[in-house]
Image (cartoon, rainbow over all chains, first blue to last red; front, side):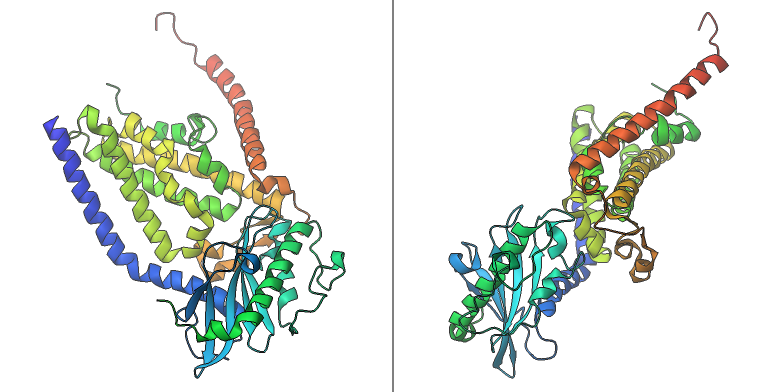
Length: 203
Length: 227
């Protein structure tokens, strides 16, 4: 028994040694990969070349359950050129997706133009609702490069309710949820633009 | 104490006779969850084989030092270490595949096949046989993963080698074959019920193939009266 216990302790030391060295070996590459993943989502919804700061670092956390769909704080990433605000990426949640909440990044310019919207997390049905994924279909392009007025035009709803956005066949609930989420994100941004850019960046 | 089986028999066991996926029905959670595309199946298969060989090697080479009552914590510690190593390697060099496999990469720890072979075989057999056994059962699990993954991807998405670049690099994106119409695919195949049905059909096919072989074996080798 003593020998067995001693071996177990030795094994634990061996495991700790192996894992520590593996962690050292891979740590840098893993951090790079994770940063790249976060940046890729932001780059997709910001106007390329129009900003010179690092939006993933210039963040504020905001809470607005009514418009942003979540009780907790959500990040707003700010893009600036020479310190002047250019655009921001609002994180919003569509609480009424078909299978659950859908997390969307919406890039909005200071002129009120929607640059693009990109879904970053969802559990929608494969083949139906999951067409909000850019790999599956280009439906999310419906939100690319859209000039908006303040207040938001009446037509910012899906076609089934008399609006201008095509719904995805067989995925009306998903389409409705995402259109509403993007719409609310734009409304939020337009009403809070000054405060959003003036606030201190969170660490 | 049983004598060490021949390598040929170990392979036949792991790949077919006692196949973990369709005979022993072990490790079904990752098998069903990750077999939605061919590449996911290959990815998890490779990870599982690696863990099994490494685990069996260590369990077998230290089999004189473990106490019977302390063997399970020792085995689990070994398995968890190797699974974490594999996960870190995937996160560093196969990041997209790691995202696609999600939680099922670390869940390899809970795959009964690995602990089962460590306990039933590796802890009682010499190192070479143990490693071969890990390879054989790992391959047995992997080919079911790949077959099920390929079939489900074919019927569900109408493609093969979707996301090949996750495992084989950017040039592999051209390997993808599309058989026309992702939206026309059988949705059921990609969803969990499709996995169960697919596995059930594979198990049935295996049972069908087993009976003629058993019958042929019985007539070919008549056992003597005093065996």
